[in-house]
Amino acid sequence: MNIEERIQQAETRIFKAVFPNTTNHYDTLFGGTAMQLMDEVAFIAATRFSRQRMVTVSSDKIDFKKPIPAGTIIELIGKVTYLGSTSLKIRVEIFIEQMYSEVREKAVTGEFTFVAIDENKQPVKILRD
Ligand SMILES: CC(C)(COP(=O)(O)OP(=O)(O)OC[C@H]1O[C@@H](n2cnc3c(N)ncnc32)[C@H](O)[C@@H]1OP(=O)(O)O)[C@@H](O)C(=O)NCCC(=O)NCCS
Image 1: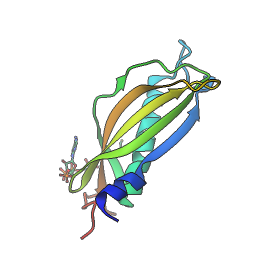
Image 2: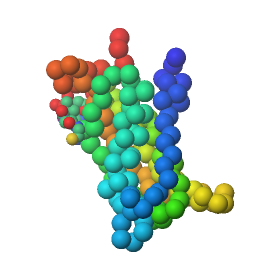
Image 3: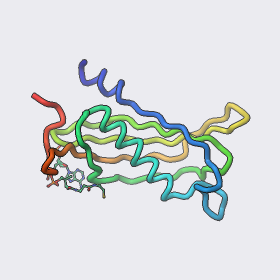
Image 4: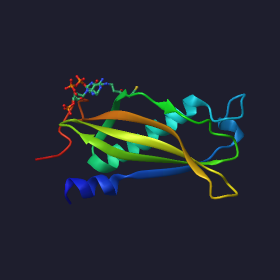
């Protein structure tokens, strides 16, 4: 499989229902919960791409463009956007979907960097020779 096919194959999507246990006092998804879900989908995408032990080393700017109301469905999409030697970047987008119509819009974007580590927690090459 070439790199482009691996990137395609590693694209990861998670759906969640925005229930009240994840919302704040404005009745919208709590930002910290959104960040946790984003890190999780990014971790899964990084792991599916590399099939190695991956750790989060950095998160870039996260833009919360629209509030995510309780009672909606969200889809998180994680995709490899950069491949370094021992690190890679995953862009994560969150889309809001209304439950009872086809309305769908982008709400949040962010990027996370992961490093592949060995059993001694030292960085190792993502692509094995
Ligand atoms: C991940 C870790 C092993 C990297 O160690 P390190 O000494 O920084 O490693 P290096 O300097 O060799 O960098 C390794 C790679 O990470 C990249 N990197 C390191 N710090 C980075 C940062 N802040 N932002 C983006 N990339 C970074 C480097 O550019 C390098 O990439 P490349 O090999 O693709 O060129 C170490 O920082 C660590 O253990 N961090 C804690 C990870 C963790 O526990 N995460 C869970 C969150 S609590």
